[in-house]
Image (cartoon, rainbow, N blue to C red; front, side):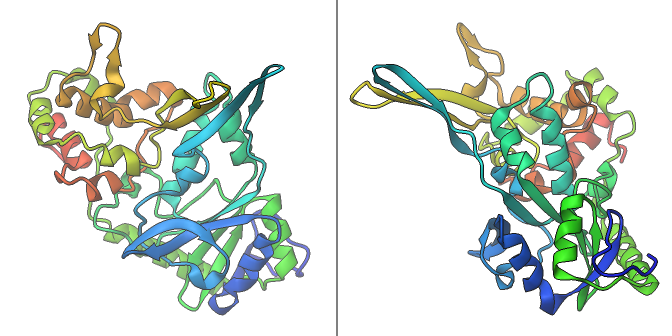
Length: 349
């Protein structure tokens, strides 16, 4: 936190950005990037393309995460044409982008997806976007009623995964520099050093946010408990409550399942290979030749919960849940994953 000359910044520095000067940051980033940030539409906060700082909404939580700008809901990954032979071309994205004001849970979700899409195969479509993505994180100084990120160690303060990290101090932000790309932007706009008093206020606001988080998930031995209780009597009950609408999966920042189909036009000369999001909560997902291995909704709900809170640890070394609470907020049946886990545990919180 020692004073440094502007233009001599380095990774790990903390500087100040006045709220009235947010446009300077957005304009500096817009020179080479498309910027996507939280905006309010129809009463909900969603991530969308922005052109200026005044469009940003400094939200508590958004309906959807910015995952869609890395793992697209629908994308053409290959185009082919029959002419003199068969000509095929992959659709590898090449545009730089900024994900602006991303909350700690959603940055952790991106770090999770980094593992997923590079686990046993390096996905060229995801990685092309990821390599060209600049992340501006936003620490939480307020929490929502369904947030439980502190239980998952994914918030309310972010420790990694960002190029720049903002913390709201009222009329100004502290800006933590997390990468060389972040250094370049901070040097370009020239910001003053944060003071010790700013650092102390930042810590105090984050502590208050953590204390305000009323929802909890006890993760102690949870993966083993879930595996040992796959026949628990609660699974059929929650399966009866579940509508199979897949809202939970659609809003989840870590769900990554997809389907791939080839579509041929009426001339039979042009084909597109399309990848789109899919969900373990819909009946057709587990349909295979000869039957369906998750025909009952209870088994599909069990898969969702157990993958998030158990199986994922074996696959990627991380929980598949970041505690954002979206699956709770947007469930029309009011199913709460923390309460499901508590029931399977034996009613103990």
